[in-house]
Image (cartoon, rainbow, N blue to C red; front, side, top):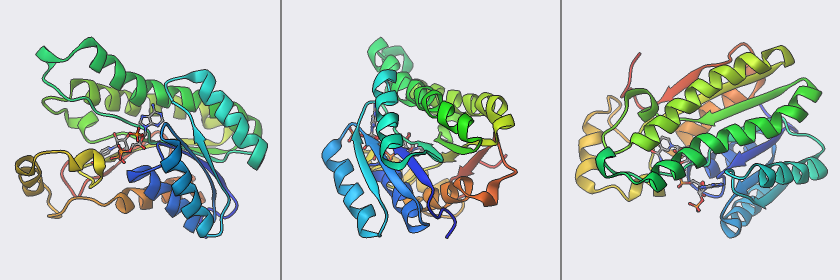
Length: 247
Ligand code: NAP
């Protein structure tokens, strides 16, 4: 088992990619805290984790609020006494062409995706620095690398996560804390299910591996980044996109 007795916080872990990451970590022996705005669904995922024989804690908190995030972290420390892994997965989209994008939609996406990632990294840094170890993984997106019409807010937030990852990696490296990002391509979840069929078909044609990704494809890379196997990797963004974007 790659994560035996580790403790992980997965934000937005109630469903989609976050849920797959939480379950994959539990299968590798980790105990999991699910932080989500949707408590009912977070509890359902927590029950699935317990079904795998691991401890789980469902917490309702909004990553945009730093004091809520800190309070949630204290509950994790109370229950598990430590936090080894943070996965910043909570994210939203509010798409629209820039000319028509409201200030509200710009602010909301930057606040959850980038602000929430900053808040969670800041909150877990203290206990991780104290214990002199930690793994921080943030879910970015290939859109943060290549851009996408209609996603000015989302692309900027994900590019911000990639830059924040590099800075956090540099600030925390002396305390044995690895900070990396994962940039998925098109992954089949409720977030992408709402796209029109025509756009989905066009996107599939641009994927060399010829299929959309599964949440489990992203989770497998997160397991690696959370494990000792990635001890010498920090500040990196690993693209998981079936070959859509090649450096
Ligand atoms: P999803 O199915 O919409 O799940 C996101 C989860 O985050 C939901 O449970 C959501 O709660 C929660 N959440 C939203 N705002 C939050 C907040 N302020 N605080 C705490 N939790 C919050 O999305 P997904 O497709 O699994 O995506 C997960 C991550 O991967 C996101 O960061 C996304 O940008 C990234 N990503 C996804 C794809 C893809 O193709 N799916 C590609 C690249 C990157 P609600 O129930 O309230 O919505």
